[in-house]
Image 1: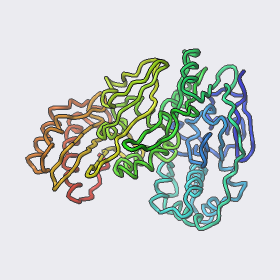
Image 2 (image 1 turned 180 degrees about the horizontal axis):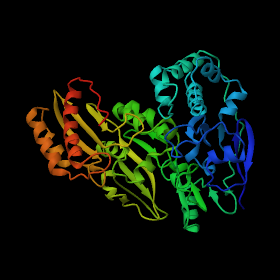
Image 3 (image 1 turned 180 degrees about the vertical axis):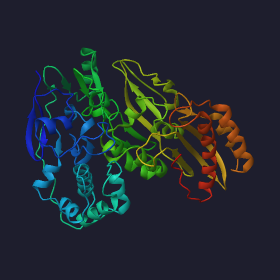
Image 4 (image 1 turned 90 degrees about the horizontal axis):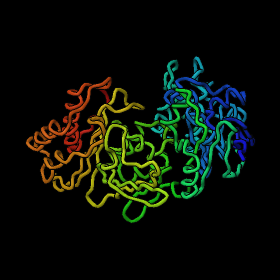
Length: 463
């Protein structure tokens, strides 16, 4: 039997007998008559649709894009909109008004939601954290200085807890007769549901796949939501690995990246806004098999292995062997990504990743280069190199590794590595860059690595 979708909305328990593939934004504006939240791009880029969400099992609210979040994903969770913040006289809204931080006001509700989420997590955020919190919110009118000032002013105020009520997920199908979501809690249950519903869509974060609904107006009769599957949840560390569950979000992974690979953490903050990191999963970023997906080159360079599970068995392989062609992988129809295992750094291990794109924040790479190595008195060893944007798939580059292994980063070694770039890749030309440009950038990133290791801080960011 299909149950209504139940969740907490601005502190009140609500039930919606609607299609499970209804976007949260559509529900808020057309069904709940909460029109403070706006639709801008319908792609998760502009932030006008931002709300605060607490997913089932989470203990805190985080900003998310309601335009690419489906009702299926908030079953048993909680949502707070700008109206919910207004009802509790949130200090941020008052500070925004007093500081002249809004002009046309279209972007303001999303900005308020994003910053309220930041202040709910950080009593006194640094200015850099405020900028990171705003990276997914586009404001064309006011400029960000008065918005940042309003956030700093509100941070000095006392904040009430964000409104919510406890909703117990039933685990039953939710939605209506035309589109329902299934919510398995165990891996075997997930496999059984997949077998029973061959027309299903498997949904984790949905920051890429949900564009089919939000932007292309596709309809999904059956959604299998992986968020509650225990074997796919969370991030943990054992003696040798960082283990990322198949439904773990970038927001969950990011603190660990900061602990072990700060350069990787910096990259993640650039390619996904706070809203995207709340929902988007690492496994989803890999499964799309995009040649310009920013997660894969770093994970390949770090020696990550991927665990694929089916009803009958599991298999583990090097991530570099997962990709076989443009948007194609070795994943079988009955398999899912169960986990990603990333070896923890050992004494002397270092890692750098550089991304070149048209915009610094929230833009797809033109070229991304990742380098893992050890360095003793300037000599490199155990080097692993991977690039994105240079072929039909993310690629590890043994020729470049061989040119640098056991070498100081002298001009001779760098020249050999640059030649290896030219010999290894035949990149395509597209709207982001010509083949020749990409080849030159990939070679130049080796010089960027050398400069970085010598202590220079030049930022690679734009075409």
